[in-house]
Amino acid sequence: MLPKRTLLLGIGKDQVIYFTSGTDAANEDQWKWASTEQGIGFTDWYPGDPDGALGQNCLVLWGKANFEWIDASCEMTYNSICKIRIPINDTAILG
Ligand SMILES: [Ca+2]
Figure 1 (cartoon, rainbow, N blue to C red):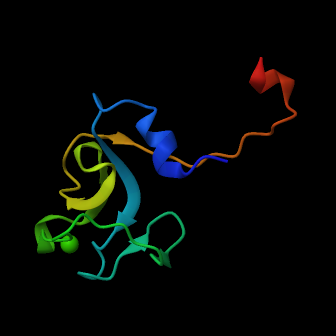
Figure 2 (figure 1 turned 180 degrees about the vertical axis):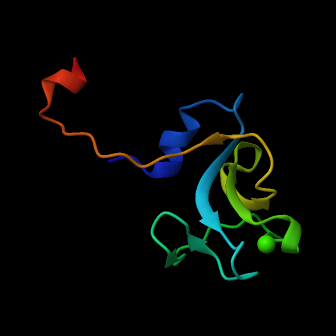
């Protein structure tokens, strides 16, 4: 199994920033996954980040920094990464 970062590098850096569900909008510097309401255990912040305080409450993966994490404004328009379950034996999905 390839590491997640390796898989992201395969997407290409022309789309260089990806939103995740990570956010500290509810409580500054208390980062959690909005999708699960769980605190973020593992971190991979770009050195110096998070640095945006109240103006940057969304966790994004920054392609130019090898997809390390930075905080960014949630008002920006970036691509998103979503976690979906794909049934491996479902031939209708796999074609
Ligand atoms: Ca913040």
